[in-house]
Length: 202
Image: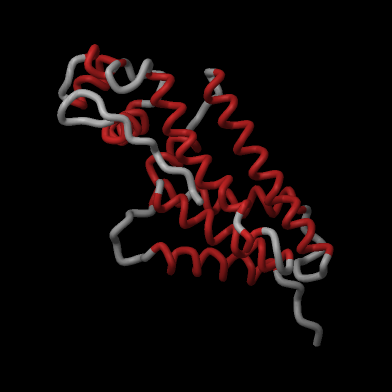
């Protein structure tokens, strides 16, 4: 099951999760490095000392946020649908579920994608993301080996282009609009897999 943000009771009016949601929004607007505890307190409408009733530090807020984003992505690969069946079917499942996690946890994934690797927390998160990408690349290679995907495109290139497309969603997708998450996933899969299928023989 995808990970969830643990709720920890703190000062009246907020719990850890509500503090985290606002903090992620502030990190995305100002940048993590440029966000001070004072800026967070101003956006929360509480004192800096009150924030420490919920989390020990700004870094702990970042770690909670990144764990929420990465936990959702990593859980996809543990699902039975990602482990059984043809490589092509497993790849399609992973792509569809990745889009679902991105939409459901949009601010958290946005923060993940904007990391610069300036802190140990960020570097650890980036390493986890690379591990996820490598596993998807291996799935693309398996689909190519089984003959369901084209042989003439390097799997690493496919991975970069595919996830470049998926990652760009955070810059323009608006939840609650006319384009549903399901239709968005359908469109991405149709576009990507139409170009990846082995051309039909005349």
